Image (cartoon, rainbow, N blue to C red; front, side, top):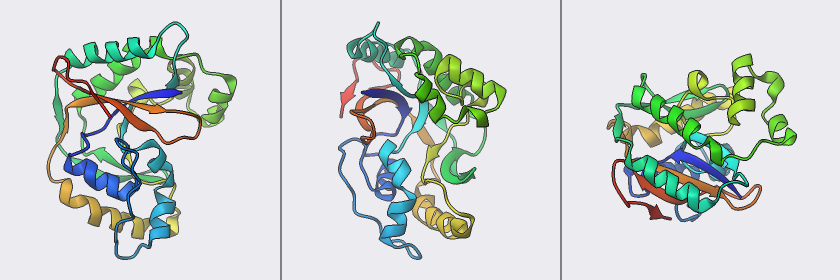
Length: 235
């Protein structure tokens, strides 16, 4: 089993509902959602372009997927997440927008959000003791030959290349999109998501996602409210 610490809005948040409809799976319940009707895209195209992010669920990565260290337990991890969340204040991402990051599309903040970068850095550091060492195969899957020196150093030290100065918060919406399809996919995303992007995104919780077995879809295990005591909710 692998664990991951992500941010995702609650399951009844308007952004979550729209993202769930777009991706075709509810990461809280595991329910498969019928593809939305979008002008210019058929069901097969939507399913193809959302296949990769559908497996991981709608989220922004804080601590990338990891196997649990033999020196710890899932009960310890849950307890530590409760303590950490209670001591962490809520904040807002003032505005999100749809951007292309390399070959894929994602929601990203329109400007720097210092509390978000701080939260990600703290999560990486504070929960690293729960992470088992990476195997050689795990490292190879990250294509280390394509990483910058700082990213490669992060991979070996923290299990993920894109932390601290290399961190760029994003919530993935598609897999790789060919240049010939970019305009159609971008237009469809704006049509679908723009109605819920006019309001700030409230960062009110941390989510523990789990992957039951290799290749299985990631699902919300528990949601921890920031700044509150004993508010963990199990999916």
